[in-house]
Image (cartoon, rainbow over all chains, first blue to last red; front, side):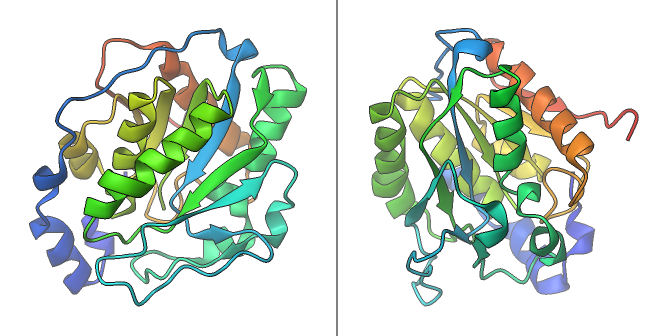
Length: 162
Length: 85
C-alpha cells in the first residue's frame, strides 16, 4: 500500500486526523455475482478525475469537493482522456504516461476479447477524489452512479482510486 | 481521500445488487470504510495498478482483484503479492 510517509506534512497530518469513521458504511450492503465472470457485464469506476473529450471539467472550487461524475464510453481512446484531478498529494507522472494505470480500459478490452469476462458496459464512470465532505456523494451522486450501472444491466464493477 | 470515495461509491453500487471489487492504496482508510471486497496493493498514491506501460503487472493486479468477486466472506481485504514482476 501507499505510505503516509510519502506525503508532504500537511497531507500526512490531514490523513492521520481525518474522521473516516464518521462516514463508515453502516449497513454494509453485499451483493453476489449472479453469473460467472465469463458471462458478466463489467463496468469500471475510477476516482482519478479523468475526462473524456468534450466533457466539462471538474469544479475545483466546490467546498468539500466536486461529487459529480463523468461517463466514459467503452470505445474511448484512453490516451485522449484528460487527467483533471486537482490533488497534488500524488505523483501525476504515472497517469500522464499511461491512463490504464488508474483506468485500465485497455486491459479490460483485452479480457473481453479473450472472453475472460462476458462483456464490457457501454459506459464507465469517473469521479474526482479529494472529496473532503462526502455527504452529497453518499446521498446523491454515488446512488445515481449505481442506478446508471443497474439500468445498464451491469453485473460486476471494478473500482480504482489514485 | 480517493480511497474513501471509492469505498462509498462501492457501497452504493452493492446496494443496487451489483458485485464490486476495489483496489486499495490506503489500508487504514479501507479498513474504516469496510467495502465488501478490496485488493490491497503495495504501490504509492497515483499508482493503483503498479506501473505505467506495464500491461503484464496491470493484468495481474486486475486478475487478483477479479478473483475476489466470488468471495462472500466479506468484508475481505486481500493483499496483492506481486510475484514475478
